[in-house]
Image (cartoon, rainbow, N blue to C red; front, side):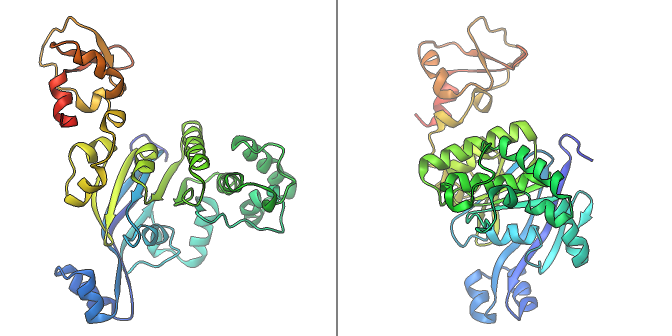
Length: 341
């Protein structure tokens, strides 16, 4: 059931080891051996290292890391395109790792969709037929799937392009077709594997904005893979940072920026423009009964936007939520500590 703050997807102790001596490699990994040591001793590669996390209904959960960190292997494990060596992957109450091939095919057809970096469109089929392909696999009648495809094309801003072929579209438009195809089957869970990384910067930004708009409208559960921390910050409700197949830290953008758990996470966050990313809510302190007679600031206001006001006063400002209720206070000393100025 779709309930606020309830988990849609739960991973528990997920391992993926490539090679014929996976049990020995797993034993070495559990005893603390490094990836390189395991590879040397067993000729096995640890792709995913004991990963546990959950994704809530309607959440955009971003997994980020550099090339070779294991993020794409992880998403393939979640979708069961790659078998896990150990662990469970629970989707809405059912463990995907224990399903039969027939049941898995049914889940993939009806509950999940994937959008890849390379669009994977069928060049000999019109845009309309590409979008409707998943519905065709499900056995939906031609008229019904055409109507749904037209509806989704309008949602992603491609109204009127249904009779064109993929090669007649720009890269950004082709990625919109891929997104429309994923949405057409009305999935519970959407996987994005670096879908915008091959696009030009301006088109990439437009596609990020489009995904944010669609998520505000459709409230899907999304697992999004990227190597770009700026993209992760922009899109993610929470972000998981991977290194060598394992998770270094999971948190909101503000949590990762203000309290990195490892040097690796700190390296990612050190050049982030904190004043643009952090909000008053991220920096505020408790009121503790204080009665502040001063200007008020919204909790979701960026530090950048309120910094000029803070610099002209020594007293704190009251932070309020969208209902006008005081939730904390903020002063220039608190901001200076976070921005390290």
